[in-house]
Length: 142
View 1 (cartoon, rainbow, N blue to C red):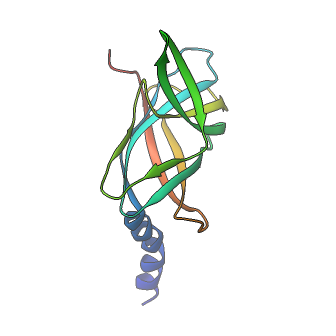
View 2: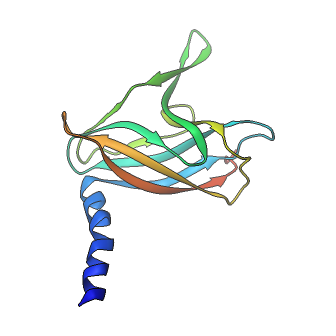
């Protein structure tokens, strides 16, 4: 009976996160040697109206949500305070668009490393809920 209760307690956060949103194809772009920043990409699909309000990672001092766009022939990157998600409408964070920026990496990343990302969500004014994701570090496809 103890083993069953332990297993149930262990799986409870996972089942709750699965009811929150799905996260697919999480990866971190291999930064150039000596760089202390890296970009992370993934696809989010909310099961209910949600707001991605922030993210953290033990691999970096800070994680910010950014958007990139071309303006008058110049690529601009902007910090976004949050990202609204509609149920059933996947949002892809990808190169040249929305992405998570890992700032002040705590150690150099190499291909094959796994980076833990913790995504914080809000629904309306309710307190944040989280999903933990493992992202693989890899070179971008050319």
